Length: 127
Image 1 (tube, rainbow, N blue to C red):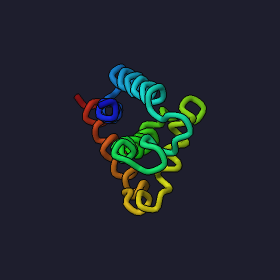
Image 2 (tube, rainbow, N blue to C red):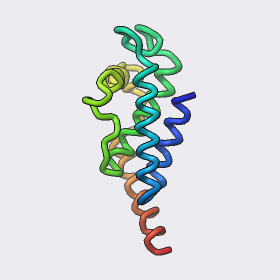
Image 3 (cartoon, one colour):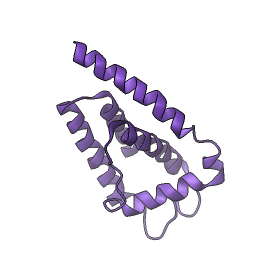
């Protein structure tokens, strides 16, 4: 269930401004810490061992969105030095041909969500 909570925390970072954004960032980092502590075991390539499983797919989609969100917000949550195994896992995961061929276009996502974020910020500033 941590991946669901992480997904909600990441979404809140996108939808929040000011103090609420700081709280959402802290919550996202706490979720990443939990995954770091209780996730990848031993020398496993993926959460389920050497093959991609459901956890990889569920978490991979959230981490992919997290990367877009980081760029839109100008913050870095999944830092390689703080989460080295998780960062390495995601690099390997997104390079798998079946995953790579099915990921949405990152550049288009960034453009879309930057516009959404600007609209959100403008509506808050005008309120």
